[in-house]
Amino acid sequence: MKHITCYYKRLNIRNVKIAILAVIVSIFFLPTYVSFEKTGNNMFRVILNNVEVGVVSSPQAAEDYVTEARRRVAKESTELVLVESELTTEGSEVLWGRIDTAEDVIDRMTDVLAGDVRETLHRSYVVKINEYMVNLSNKSDVTKLLQAALDKYDNSGTYHVKLQLDPARELTVLSAGVETQEEALVNAQETLSMEAGIHADLTEIFEEVEPAGEKDFEDYELGLVSMEYGDEIEVVEAYLDESELMDVEDAIREVTQDEEKSDVYEVVSGDTLSEIAIKTNIPMDKLIEMNDSLEDENSMIRVGDELIITVPEPKLAVVRQEEAYYEEDYEAEVIYIDNDDWYTTEKVTLQEPSAGHRKIIALTTFENDKEIAREIIKEEVTYEAVPKIVERGTKIPPTYIKPISGGRLSSNFGRRSRPTKGASTYHKGVDWATPTGTAVYASCGGTVARAGWGSGYGYVVYINHPDGRQTRYGHLSKVLVSAGQTVTQGQKIALSGNTGVSTGPHLHFEILINGTQVNPLKYLN
Image (cartoon, rainbow, N blue to C red; front, side, top):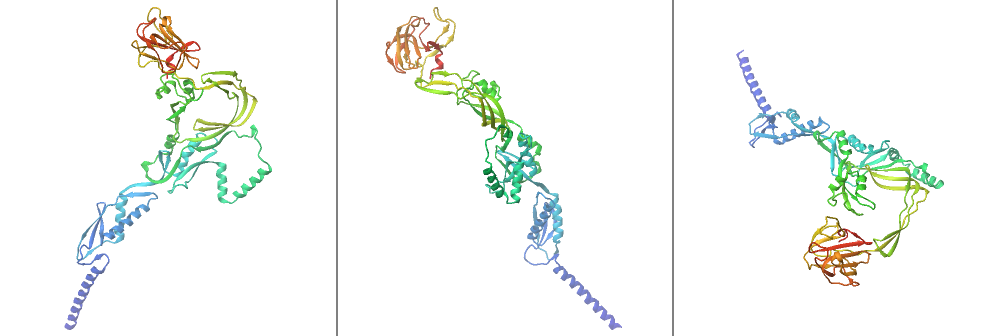
């Protein structure tokens, strides 16, 4: 009995040793523990966004786990997700220790990242119209915005937006065009079948059998016949934060409403400032304010002058063509007969005009609400217009220069207070105050008609010019030319003085056209 008891004691001791050995082996060989190796840090605490999420065997394991956690967070959204992820590891060298399973660490990382999502970027569309850009949340809104610009001028709903890939661009960029419902249907059919070539052949055959003749007025489908965008449009897909997106209704208002834009108006024959103000729908005072070249409503304008105007235009221009029928009285173009012996200032009407009458189909092109072109595509004259016939000169007329250097303009042309006894209250020239003896020059080349004393003029010189005009130079102190003498422009003809009816040393200068004095300042270069 004693022998058996000793045997059991030895057996229990051996079992205990075996159990202890098994525990030790499990510590060193189970995957959640690390064994001691004298190689430096072999266990790492993982901290993500300042939150401890577990213990791993290496920094690379931590990197792999956070990548998987980010993937899981992103998978929960159909949009692009941006999330903060600051990952750090703290290593230590241990004899043995327990590490967390990959799934536990990834789960904790996923919870941390989900709570730190910075923003969700939505798949969106950037619409660029020239330099203007607007961000919309989906392709449907893009179509709605661009369609609104068309609907502004198309009440029938015939024309629609056509978005298509731009083949000229390396990146994925959509361009916008316009098509009719019928064109959209044809394009769809051509995509589904190869009948397009057959259709073209049949069309050609029928045209040969029944060639198209000239249309009658009732054959035209009057109204809107074409539309296109007048600005370049680019549509690009992008991922944007919701705060960067614009509501489509706000975008429509911003793109289609009129705003003031600067433009240039070129003066054409027959224009006056008042007519231009009516044409451009700009008040006269505002038109003058915008143009430094205009002083008042009486300012002179010439054909080809360019005036700054403001016109109301939307951000997205729409160009459209409309066919219209109307009847009108019309004027025939003026017929000119050139006369090389006359100056360009001379013309004579040989035949007075008479208006005609016609029926018209016109194709008018508009950019937004502004007419930019008109083409008559059918015309039937009820009775012919009689043209105006004008004979006109072709020679360039001579020019006129100021007859003295310097001098102060002391009396202008027109009504004035009588400066001295015997003087006129209506001044028929202009006066420049200047010291006696100042050189006086011929304002234009010509023939001296008179040189000498001229009563109220004092010493005076008259010069006849090739264009039929005459210049007069009065109150001279000395005359240097004689009647019948030919002089050239700028030639010295006299010295200024104070002779005749005069209040002081000055030069009196006149220009006469058809024997009547005119304001000389309007004719001097």
